[in-house]
Length: 480
Ligand code: ADP
Ligand code: ZN
Ligand code: MG
Image (cartoon, rainbow, N blue to C red; front, side, top):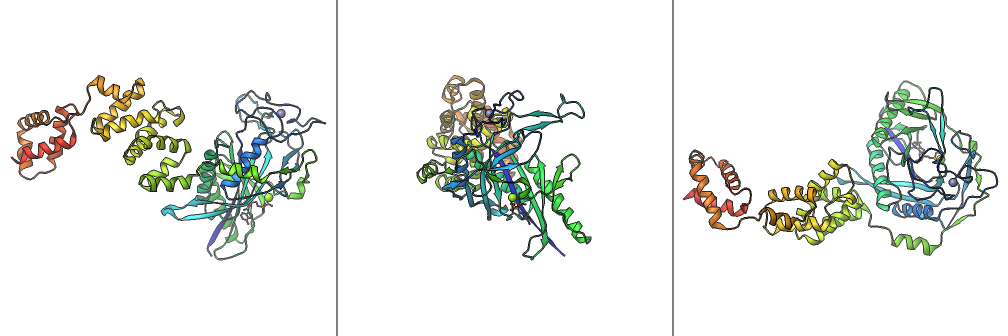
């Protein structure tokens, strides 16, 4: 019998608001332990939460970007459970009547086929604190509690069980990460825990309509780990079924070191949490006007922008994909392309030199020292045949090192491309005289030697000869 996997993902994204969701404490990552707390996020008796408007706006942005219906009326609920990093004894979340429902997003499979993955809901909730054991400063058999993260705003994005393979799960997570970053609502940093994913997974005989029993996987701290953990769990479930066993509904922890899953607890049911409407918060009402203001202010989303880059700039889809992967890169490219006629030239340089330097310097494009207009100036020198592409690479390095403009560097170093035919002809004459054997072999039909001879001409002119002219003049000289 053949089996097929059924996967649904629950993604928690930490919203990058300055303050927490129900109090004024800050949310900066890496602050000293237990320094960002107040009676509200510690849940002291008698305090009252006040909802952060920005957090709601961010959640609505994500809802709109994933085609959800935004509820005009939604409510908060208490989810009660005991855990050392949850001093209140409950988490304020949304249960019935969440803020966003019934959406979808598209993932792109190899070959460009689009697949829709449904979004059941996106709701707002607060994060819990952290139990710290694995750090050097914690002794064995000891756990320390850091409550800084209590009350950090989260959205939870719950997908339909529409995902059919670990790779699709990976594509889905990348899309979510790209979207939250485009929207500027979450930095998408999985290592710092800004984006966390739980995976629900079951298998069923291929063609069967009914779902099998699912397990829930937790503790995967990278997209690659999600993919690996899902692969492992799919195989585990199939082997279990094939040997006559049954899948037990439970929560499993992924152990990345040993590449296997460990049972964590039997799956809790909703009633275990004793959900009830949060009595300290009024229902959340989202006016149509506000919702529409947020919709109008949404940035152009990645797929739309990708398609526009292909149409407007005539770029290959590959280029457009790379350039629109991150909003800031796409903004940078557009700013360059605005002043350079040859969009493909601009694309080659941004994808090539610029992204290479960012990787080397481990920085983002917003910190990049060569601003779009400075790069455009350099590219226009190439487009106008003032300098060759090869010299331009040197000028680019010089711009990086010294912050001077391309024109200034070209002037100072005398790098202007030589389009003076007599000068190039002189160099050609010298090269022919100096390489009689190669010239003869070329004349006897070894055409690939032409490249060598052009190279010598370029060398003789220290790279400054206009390559097109050098080619022409050399070719003429060789036939005569
Ligand atoms: P629970 O009540 O166990 O939390 P939900 O119905 O709320 O389950 O769904 C939680 C997540 O599990 C969703 O992402 C959903 O797509 C997924 N899911 C539901 N049933 C299955 C299944 N049989 N196999 C895989 N994923 C599933
Ligand atoms: Zn607080
Ligand atoms: Mg559920």
